[in-house]
Image (cartoon, rainbow, N blue to C red; front, top):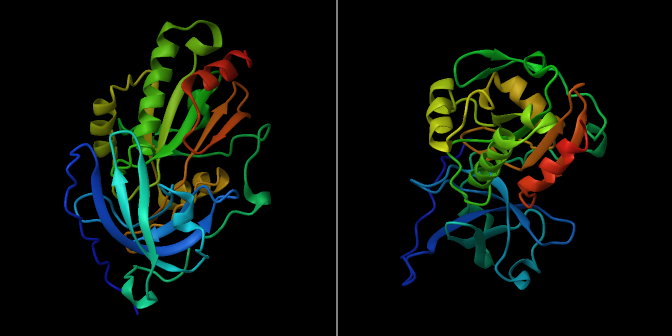
Length: 278
């Protein structure tokens, strides 16, 4: 039986207005190998974020030390302009969590994932101008792709990718050789919501130069194929989005020249990788 998504309640604001607090519930779906983060499928947060499955960093490691996959938890999300963390994590009864589906997103097997040196898989997407794009669009140009969605409010996820791409765009405009010829592509993982018109507004807000930086959407099956290859698994069932981060550099020949997992990469790392693959 389908369960209605129950919005998480917002906690009272703390005295420090720079930090926003949200009370939420969810189910533990996994951990980073070093347990530095915990992946939680959580309920929607009304007016802030849809139901998602994503990794969270605990404010203190002990917050998640006793957790296991499948545990139902309640927790507080602390948000600043630059980062997100969770605190006051506690186990609760499973029936206290209202999720839109009962099964977790598929977990990537090592054999499914694209690696450096692999050819970029074919795709046909639609950019923010309503134009069809494919690997042929970038033939002869290095290009960098990342995955975002416009409703993501987490400052250290999609907004950080936007800031990083903005810095890359500046480097491209002032660069020479391969760097000057590099293009940027942000692919949405929320194609049902992120239409070309929405992406056009988002691109303008990001200050994207359409000659360098495009945003793209497409058929859900096409988005799934791209996301799966780069281990950015998405599942939008009943409003729940699974969200991870991967950024890739594709060389002039259409091969993957570099992969950056997560959000810790710096624009200069990619600039150096571009210049190392003239």
